[in-house]
Image (tube, rainbow, N blue to C red; front, side, top):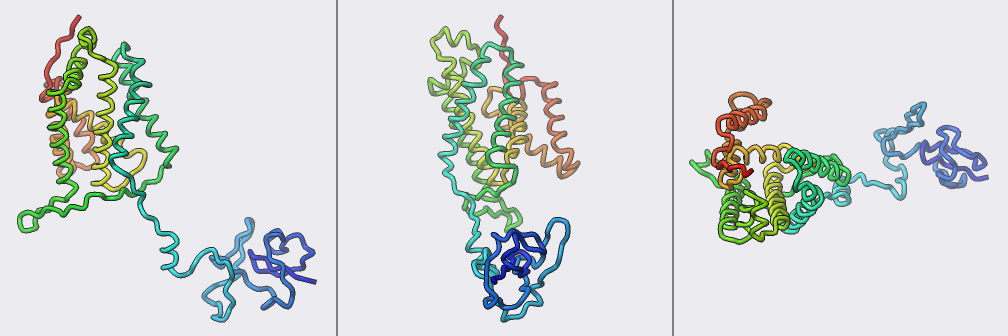
Length: 328
């Protein structure tokens, strides 16, 4: 009559039993062996931790430290005790993505969002548009949460330029900072040229001041607004790339506070002014850094928003914004 060795706790029992009398493991999960094949009776289990838990009670079956060297190694071991083998089997490399493709896809997403969430509200009050914007932001966050999960992942650094060392090494400027500054200057110059020198840019200016008059002049208002959303979304993708490169961690909530601060910087510098938005962002960053260094790191965000309130009270149009007369 053959016996069965329980793969969970190592107990040997007759094959007529339906389950292990010790741990209750079903017989179909254990291997059938004959008495001649048994190395020893009541062979200990070769589980990973040397301990077995059966729900109601725990029993220590085997300790690897007390195992003899000539004990037979189990076959088909699901893991390796060699750390180098584990590194070969579980080598997690960051997933590579084409930045240009991501920027284009983000621009398309911005175009679709404008068509779905903003175009139906073209004649609605501005408060309705603001509420729609807040709703879309939360919708995107939760969609990313469902798709990618809430775990924070590392962001690969694609900027491999050397850092800039000044003052005999006492001041070191990282390559990410240099690339960010250069990218901001180039993007600002490109936007200014696009708005002032192209027909689409002039159409954006006209629509921003008076949609009705722009439509009477033959400007495609819906197409111009959609193009604006696409360009803004593409620039947001570039900003997200630079942000995650500087702070290499990413989760669905990474862009929440930077997005709010970007809006604050635009209002601070002046809505409708591209140089004003950049200057507002720089001043906002300086204020936040000094607040963290000399006042309180926990109060830095509150101080930033307090400065915004003061600026709006003193100069509602922002630093470089211009007052637009309402047409009635």
